[in-house]
Amino acid sequence: MPLLRPTPRLLAARITKVKVPPGTPRTPPPKWKAMLWTGVFAAVTITGTIYGAGLKTQQEWQSEKKKRQEATLEEQTNLLNTQLKKLQKEKAEIEDKLAYVRERAERRRERDGQ
Image (spheres, rainbow, N blue to C red):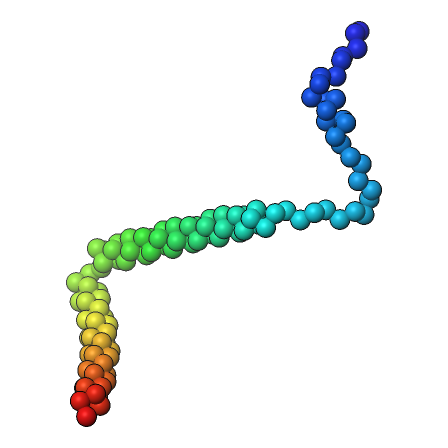
């Protein structure tokens, strides 16, 4: 069996390899690499979170839609009344906030006008 000759590439690799004594600390990677990896992991995490939240919301809508379709007239009436109460509560909260903002604007006008 003939002996294989090492290629110039292997010879160069052997020549440039430096034996590092055990216990010698490694040099840290460049700062830009650490920043890049941090950004990549953050982007993947954020994308996964948004995608997962979208899937969950879609499933909730579908289950709610299915409930409404399968509900009897009495149950549909109760659902609509519940939604009406919820909307009325939100309307009252928004009206309170609007009244507060208008009151602040009026006080500011009076203060600036003096």
